[in-house]
Length: 447
Image (cartoon, rainbow, N blue to C red; front, side, top):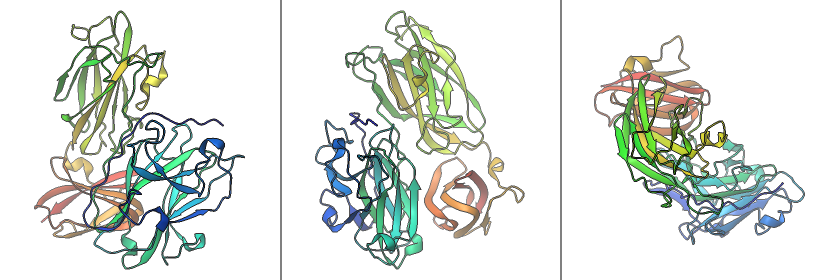
């Protein structure tokens, strides 16, 4: 199995919180990796390409080779590998010092990425409720994923059930014959702050010689966005971010998107639009990819040649702000299926990112009835604390006002949860509960 060091640079988005119980950024803020316990429980031999990882977990410079680990230079993180000779399953533990859990809603935050998208390492996070630092002491699983994103991603989970306890937290690489996992900016805060959603990118568009081959998008017109940009070729602006420009849409409604671009001559170009309707940081879930049926050809980007496509907002799209990506590429989707991949660039094209604000179609469409509800909220109307009981483990709770604005969010990881609504003004709100089986919402009256 062959792995390569990826040279694309991804920028971590740090999570900003309030008072901290514990932090470790491996750069001097925190006790340092020497205070952590590392256990190489698998005893396997790292492959020659990753044999610099000698203790199960090592402190490494995120710059790596030419920014290969996501940079910047001088920013350190903890790295583990699951690429062994001979192949095997990793069982490498990175165990924190003891942490005294306190506060109103203590929360664990961390930044993480798998180095290779083709061989993404998975991991689990374990907790030792007794504060012991042997593998046997870790009896609680807090988190588990079979494969992490290949770009820096910020994550969070609640430690509320462990208030008053001295615990240890372990990051465990348990992957089978993958590549490398990197963890950074670990901290525990007294209160919960919604971590930013991170998206793959920036995308690169280069020719066979590795030179910039951006052929720009020159017009995006959609639901309030009307962005006209330069038609200059080969400027090195493969991926542009216009996140301050917002399209406003309503659940269940349809909107036309009009697109133009420079084709660099008499060549056929195609567009694909990606919109993260469920706000999970992934742009190609079911119903989020729009293949624009019209193509453009022999256009300089300023003429009348354009592609128009209708986009229907799903009725269950989460209210609030989310990400839209427009991607233009030489050729057609039949010729190059990678055009429909939101995280892959290519030759001769460009990508642009925008913000989309989703409004609820009506409060009534979100109300959960007794017949179909998998959770209940009470009391309703509520003055301060809203109780949520679910038949399934709750992943997150979000509260939206009547305009669709997200006013409260919490990561939960338990079946029962209490939401403090005391600081909200009186009115009607939508409470959306997300579980592993999807999302449901309820209308709540705040007195």
